[in-house]
Length: 138
Image 1: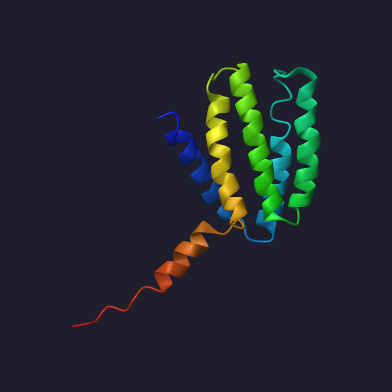
Image 2: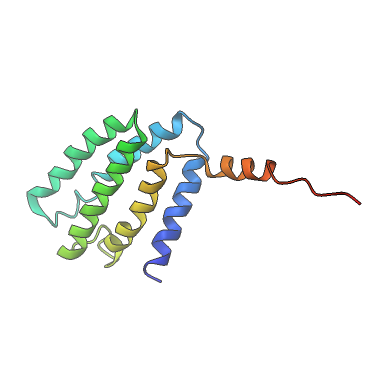
């Protein structure tokens, strides 16, 4: 169950983000990935190295304003930071020991969607439903 729920959370996140119309969807995602870079600042589990990710993610988020690929890269960078924190024993949520592990599972789900260009999940479903084969009427 500790792997399934983060995947479900990632899919829910993708569905919710799909509700935002383009071009705003990409811009909001760039801001989110920039904010994700600062998620571990209060924990301080890696000491001064904690300042590396926010600096890198600021650049990645800036590039993400024009590129879904950069946003996907940002989520994978955050995944790497999640793994480091999980191994260090300093989770993103201090009251939830496996929260960094869960985040490391969830983030790649969002990254894959970003690498696909951040398409509207609901737009794809509507497109498939509108192209269903005609059924013969009796």
